Image 1 (tube, rainbow, N blue to C red):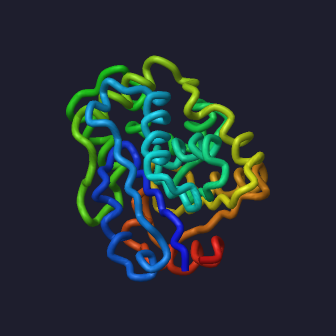
Image 2 (image 1 turned 30 degrees about the horizontal axis):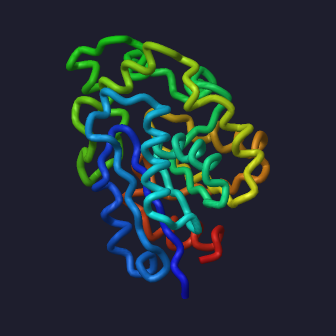
Image 3 (image 1 turned 90 degrees about the vertical axis):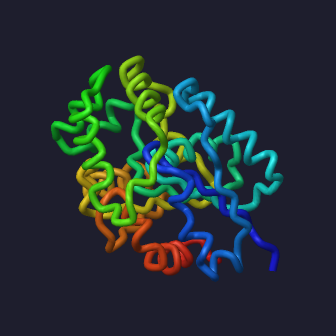
Length: 239
């Protein structure tokens, strides 16, 4: 059996180690060649457009376009744009809230002090801890994240442009895709109103396969891998 490639792209406040559980599952190794996409070392000097070009080159250098791109959080939003460059790739979007623009994206978020802090140009140490407590509310395996440059990157781009291109026209991009696309969401996320994501996306993108896990929180996919990837996703993508 010819293997497909499974490209894995983590979110902003995590690291490539978050995918280690995938590499240990027998049924994934039997069916896929695994490629974990890496962020630039100097993320604070990057931009969203630079990231897209950076990941595009990694995928092209790997030389295998017949596969699935699986992204979590920001990695899923980046995956939507990479899906425009590589339309033959199927997409799995995890704990992602596709939107028309960044302001629309933030309409999915629960009102909280942590959300208010995200809009500020500078954060105090206490405010950063508050944001982290929301991001990692259910990540029982520890805070596997990037170094401080990830916060500089997020703060800079939110402060500079609340309608950055990374979040523009995601609904349109998803609607014109011919390859399979699945959105995986869980409850219990302190940041995102996942029920609203579910019902709104089901209406706006009829072709989108929306899967709900029994896990809880922004990192629920990590703690319930067999449950969603080994059952629902497997059926959805016929592998």
